[in-house]
Amino acid sequence: LYALSEARYKHQTKDHKNFREVETLIPTATKFHLTVDQRYGVRDEGNLALDFFETLSKSVAESVDNTLTAKKTTNATESHTAEGARDICNNGMVVVNWKHSRIPNLSAALGCGKEEGCPQKYHSKDFDTVWLLTFQYSIEMGNESKKSHSRNLKNSPIAVEGDWKVSAQLIKEGFDYNNNVVLRFR
Image (cartoon, rainbow, N blue to C red; front, side, top):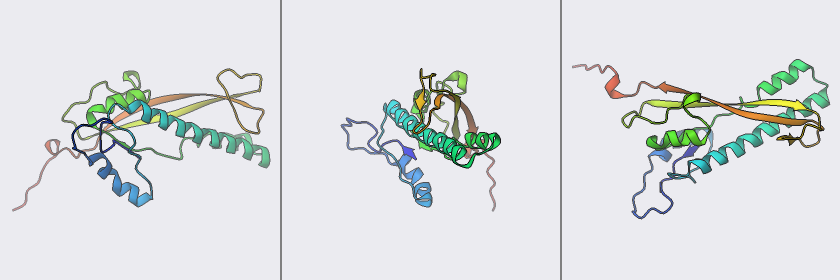
């Protein structure tokens, strides 16, 4: 879970703090025993993206290592290995609660532009849309001689090359008071 830092700006001169992004995630963090990472402020979108991809890449590398180790130790079939490879990125979700006018900047830092489904501007009165970014890692496996842009897995003579792809969906949640029917009972 990531939330915009309560201080917002690193060199903030006013003693004004905003807790909205953090407070929105606290019930989820409490329910699932997670912490809310609030190290990043406005204009820190690039640093958040670097942290996100570093964590995600480590997770993928561990999953690939585990899949290859399982194949080696259990003499797994090709279909079992393919099944494990499909599950590499399906084991987690990251939630980011950010200043809504900065979400296009954050999505751009995460590699999502207009072609991937992320608009460059966000309507200032839209507090009802969830941006769902999906990251997919495509892997090519080869032999040791194929080393350019590859990450060699520990204890494995197999070189792995990969590429991140991102796509986006913008989902209207239906919470916007102005767009919903309100029933009044007397």
